[in-house]
Image (tube, rainbow, N blue to C red; front, side, top):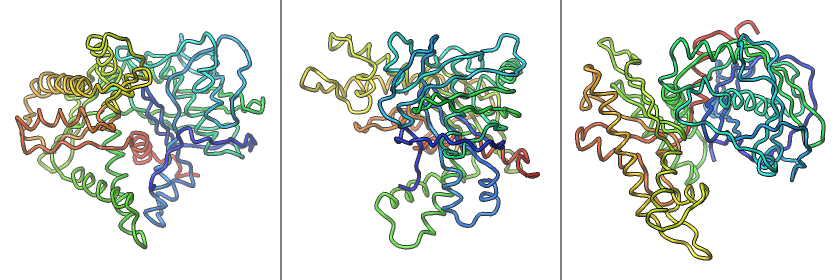
Length: 446
C-alpha cells in the first residue's frame, strides 16, 4: 500500500512530554463523518523544499490523521474504563478556550468522548454536523477542529509531546460560507489560545496548549482540487521511479494516478463537485485569455443534500417497500453492499439502492444546471472540459453502484465530450496545508 492513513489503527500513545514549544502548519477537513488533519513541521517543510526523492516527499505530505466526527459532550467527571490502551478506545478529552475574541464563544470548557467511549457513555447524546447550519455557526465544527488537532499532535509526537504548539491553520468550509460575516465569526471563535487535555489510558492527563495564530479559509472543492493535483503527480513520480517490479496493487494505483493526473493537468475550464455527509459543494475554474486558471466565485454553491440525505431517503424507501424500519448502520451497509439483514438471512435491496442513488444524481444535476450554469452567462456545459467529483457520497461500494455514474450519464446526454472523473481519495487536508505553505513563509525564519 503506497498511502497510509492514521485511522483507528490501534496506535498506543507514549505520553512522555518534551516541555517544548513547536510550530505547525495544519490542513484540516472537518467533515460530518470524519475530521482529517495533515500536519507539517519545519523538518517536513525542509523535505518538501529540498526533495531527496518523490517517495519521501509523498509520504511527508500524505500522512493523514483521522478521528470520527461524531461525539458527545459529558457534563460530569464519570470514569469510563477503556477496553484497550489503543487511541481508538481512548477518545476522551477536555477542551477549553483561554484567550479568544468571541463575546459568546462556541468553545468554553467541554469534556468530549468519541468512538468506543461514546458508545460506553450511558445516557450520552451523539452530536454531528447537520446540512442547514453554517459550519462557522456550529459548535460541533469548532470542537472537531480542536479535538482533531490535539489527537493528531499526540500521534505525530508520541513520546515527545510538546507543551505549546503555535498553529498556522488552513481549514475548509462550504462554498457559500466565505462571506465576511462567516469569516469574522470563525476568526473570533478559532483564532487564539485553547487548552487540549487528553485523559489517557494510564489515568494521567496530557496537556497541550494550542495557539492558533493564523487562519486561512478555503472551500472544500478548491482544497480537494489543489491537493489532488499535487498528490497524484507525486504518486505517478514515486511509482514510476520505484526500482523493481510493482505489485498488482501498485500497478493499479499507477494506472489510476496517471489517468487522474493527466485529466487534472489539462488547461481547460473545469468544475469540481465535492460530496460530503451533510452537503454537496461546487466550484468552477475558468481558463482566461492568458491561459491562467481563475476561480469564479459566482459559481460557488452549496446544495443541502449529501450522504445523510441519501441514507434517510433509502430508509424511507425500505420502510415503504419492505414494511420495516432499518437502523442507520443497516442503511449504510445497504448502500455499500446492496443487502440488509433479515433475521439469519439477507435481503437483496440493490434495486432500491440504485433507485435512490439515481434520484440523488438527478437532484444534483438539476441544481447544478439551474443554480450554477443557467444563472452564469459565462458558463456553457458543452465548453466545460471536465467535471471532477470526490467524496464518499460518490464512491462505488461493493455493489458497484455510484451516484457519480448516474450523474455522468445525465451530463453526457447534453455534453458527450465533457469528461466526468471521480477522484477516489480525499486530499482536502493536503490541499489546505499546501495552499498555506505556498502562500505564507511560515518556516522561513526557523
